[in-house]
Image 1 (spheres, rainbow, N blue to C red):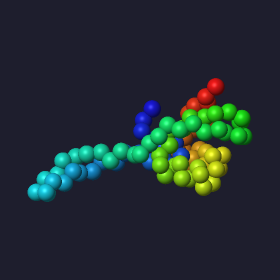
Image 2 (image 1 turned 180 degrees about the horizontal axis):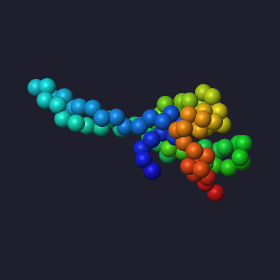
Image 3 (image 1 turned 135 degrees about the vertical axis):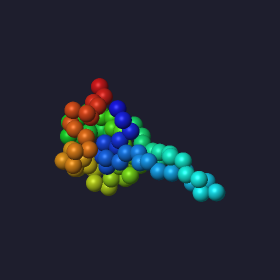
Length: 86
């Protein structure tokens, strides 16, 4: 699985390291990702999501169910990709 947030759709971007003498070399700006477990009340189970720090704030603000519905509607994740923990 790639390094993409399942809630916000954020992924790594490419940029440059710029030295003091302004020489440029390519680098990647990776996303601040966590694998977190959440209790999904509507399905009465635990799920594991690969979520960024901003995605955690979204879940805290609007709730897990609303955040998942928005992410699925925007195409950031699919219901089949969500890992259910037994």
